[in-house]
Length: 152
Image 1 (cartoon, one colour):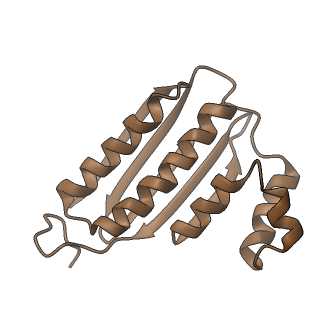
Image 2 (cartoon, rainbow, N blue to C red):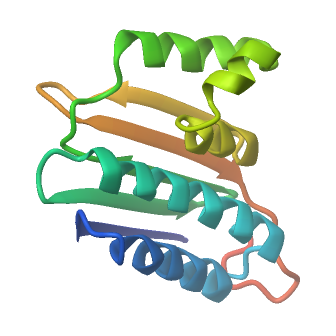
């Protein structure tokens, strides 16, 4: 069995906790371990906050899917997308730990992407054809003993 949902949200701060609550409710109902649910909800919050800040038009989308023992979440916006430098920097960070200089450069911006990377098993940042950014991330799920969807 799997669970899938998609939201189209206005680019407003109030949309962020709405997406987070829907994810947490889905995870609770499915029987996902609370620590895993929390990690995913924080990652989703960061991705949504980035979309609210950077989306050019009035909305962004969130899609979440629990399938087997994995949850995949995608947040897409219509903003300017990731610059070449941002994508190269993100790829570089995944290869090695942040240096003191890198940490200083993330003091005001970019911490959300770093946090997403730290909380999930796999993350991908890319641009949509035309315009817009997409942040996709996956995490392997752990289940409570009473879960409804426990992967076999």
